[in-house]
Image (cartoon, rainbow, N blue to C red; front, side, top):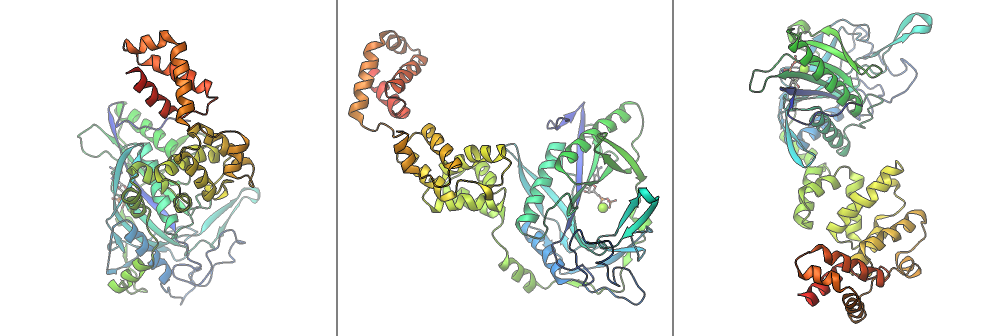
Length: 485
Ligand code: ADP
Ligand code: MG
């Protein structure tokens, strides 16, 4: 696999990326007709007269699609246009029965806004240009075995929201992080099921390179990236290819390209059309889309707490770092698990560490979702309470967690007793051990007093051993330092 480009310069060139993402909206019926949008039906069983463009049929706007667009706009801090316009985008292709696609051109419903995310621990902001409503086309089915191509119009008229960014991204890693964040948001607010294999969330990456400080280079658009892995591979290949062209003294031609996962290469499909080629004009069959402020407010009042807002609340209420809060709001399920653990008495920072550390590691190892975690949030909370009240050490807690993971009926306190994991909290008993170890290790004591702080570790180790691992390392450290000062 290729390595993500994270540094700003690749062979002295700056990478510039802008995204156009098609999110299929999760309405039951199509954007301008009442046919079903369900995936996987027999070809042409879900295409009604409107989708087939039979003469005399007229489009009727689906309110649910507009509401979903408003939701995205509110989630991303965009302006919701009080009046937007549907246009006809004219082109000829067998899977487009009308000979035009209904889309929004000059005045889209969602304008501006931004997507914020972390790249490693660096915070990034990608500005949106717009998000507009449009209908999907049908599909050509190339039936190689009979040497014919069939058309399936089930997808024709499926509602899409095309989300367009400014050319703000500077590496394939940043582009993938953006796409993952956008994917998280659309699925979180529930406007799109996010299923990339079924094509519900497909990204076009516009890629160019330039010498730092120079004007923008000519872009090529990689179409229909439907996995995060391919996205990164495709962009990395494209960047190397463009740099090679330029270094060879050739010019980049604006083009639409496809990524082939089998070869790992991008290849030009067609030279890019200009807007003029599409002869856009307002669709006379559809009145302007009017979104009254009351409608926007109603949609806002019905929306669940957004990940960004929730993360800010975690920072304010639980004193978590922005990084932790962001990690805990990667999905509704993770956030829900964290909140349930807190409600059951877990200390927030400890819960955050365990959910993103021990729990995440095991879930990943078994390819499980947090919703399938064998240890409930309430049970994890019981365990964390025992760390917080010094009954057990963090290490001992991992052993308890092991048992909880494999045995659904196991109880935290019973495991602690059965395994004898209780920490030694009796200061008198510990003091005896500490004194014994100090007396028996004169050399280490002398070294520590001479300024070798590492010698203390040897003493702590001895004491832990003598206590059969039940002493509290923090307490030992304090005691040793006091005695050897
Ligand atoms: P078009 O309407 O022809 O598709 P747009 O101006 O709408 O072109 O841009 C489409 C996408 O390409 C946007 O996401 C934009 O950010 C991106 N883009 C524009 N110019 C460049 C460039 N030079 N390099 C990379 N991406 C670009
Ligand atoms: Mg465009």
